[in-house]
Image (cartoon, rainbow, N blue to C red):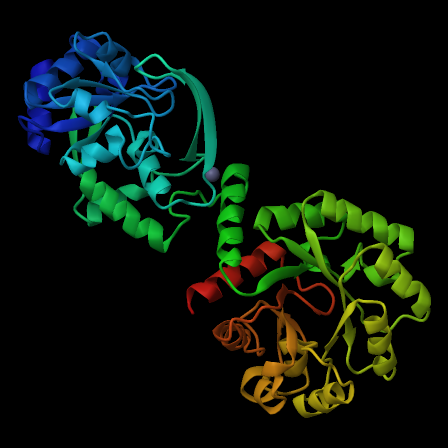
Amino acid sequence: MTTKNDIERGLRELGLANGDRVLLHSSVVSVGELEGGADALIDAFLTVIGKEGTLLAPCFAALGIVPETLKKRPGAVISPCPVGTVVALGRDAEALCRDHWIPDSPHAEDTPYGRLAERGGFICLFGVDQDRNTFLHGIEARLKLPYLGEVSEKFTTPDGTVREKTWHYYPGPHRDFIGLDHRLLAAGAMRIGRIGNAEVRLMPAAELLKVGLEIGSEHPDFVLCDNPECADCTKQRAALFSARIASESFKLSASSQLAGRYVDEIVEQLERTGIRYVELDNIQGRPAAGRSADELADICSRIRRAGSEISALRLVALPDDQEGFWKKLRLCAIPAVIAPLASPAIADFAAAARRNGIACHVANSRMTAAQAASAYEALGFTSPSFCFNPAEFAAAGENPFLTSYRVGRFIRKTAQLDVTDGLWDGSPALSGRGNGEVKELVSIFRCRNFPGFLVLGGGMSGGSGFTLADHVKWFVRMLDRM
Ligand SMILES: [Zn+2]
């Protein structure tokens, strides 16, 4: 049987003292047999922190018996915010809770949470883990993490005014806070003790905030789980990736055959990874360019309805019926076509593209840089229209960055960089894992604030055995190391 005295002793051992302010998340049952139940737990805290101290507990949603019990104590203050509400009792209760509804985030600056950190307060997890730690929402909010949402409520302010307000940077569904424990311990920002059967964590709020902001600035996915079956975290990761790409000068597209076989699958993978554009190469194992006008229009409209955009249509060979081809592209509002530079009739094709108001970018295939550069010059493009494919230069026996890129002076010519790696023998590889010198190329294009498309799996030959998610993972790794 655990008593109020046991709890008091345990809290003092953890470092809680007279005059402290503490935000408590708790599970009474975790203590085991507790004499006096929730009241004893609350009384123990109030005894340790004394009349000068303040005890707080989050009391939105169903956060348990302790906040409910605390609310009924004479002098308890409920913060005037319908989302992220806390109950407070003690000397600073009023000051900590005041105007809680006003700030844009209910968990960050100018809230009981933020004020607690400023006033040297503590966060206590009593028999619960970091997943229950509402203070962590404030860290996500301060980082303005792009996956955070908003919440709207109608409520009455303390002066009796009925208002409707939208709060931003509001936490989403699943996150994984449990893994933070070892980081906090390593940083000396948390002490763990045992009271009854309960594991009890005590953290200075300011320390927790500092460590959390440090980790989160470097790894914005620090509280997302890595279970690929978790739809919530997959979606939140996609939002992080989209925001990251939006901060780059280039635009990112993905090969449709890399994304999936069927349109539904392609659209789903684009959504899961957070990529906005798709380049149509193969659909259901057949070249998209070979589809009838109606079929292609249907494919395009399904992609667009799902919120994705088409960056280009890719050809492995020039079409026989060019009139029909241009008509089809105009009908489908496809803005650009990627065509093989090595085609004998490429000059006429590029001229026809221009007449039809469609951008034509020409891609190297099994050519050396010198051959590609001279073929490109012969076309007399007035704006950059080269599609640089590293895997193809590697397959032609060149070092794509050290040799091809420099020899061909492609810096001024390139409109698109295929993020497609490969081995010398022409077999595919993950970006940065083959002979394509993809990392060096992406880096040099970024250095000049390249405004064109980077296309994951662009111009890849056949199936690579890798998924779009694999490519994105490697692409992120690559960017992280630049
Ligand atoms: Zn998750």
